Length: 161
Image (cartoon, rainbow, N blue to C red; front, side):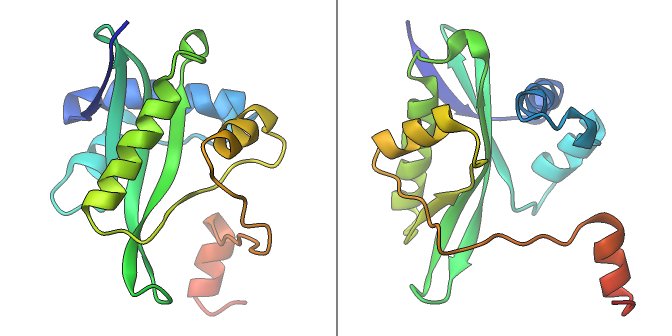
């Protein structure tokens, strides 16, 4: 069994959307996926876009993906790497594919001078939490993530809140 991580290309947009949908089903949020193949092509593969994607293959077959971008830490005075999504198909879990993708991202973070590598996990996702702890990652429980989206974002931007 050979695990290979490669940069995603525009031709992977349909595959990436399939993985996104599978991840959303796992996270009980399939109804929240509104992205189209065209959205994926535009947001990941147009010139100057900040997000990047990787495809994980086992013996040449795609089994997972991840999307990441660079953030910035004012306290460190350095960029960071933020993992937006990581997904491995159920049949390939336990193969080492997820760990290889995380290691690949950690290598990118080190090569580009990042001061940290961060991501979020749903509080009920015990398998993922256990996995992340097994590689030495620690939860940042003192921080609470906030979000403005949809109508609330638009309303606030327009000065209505």
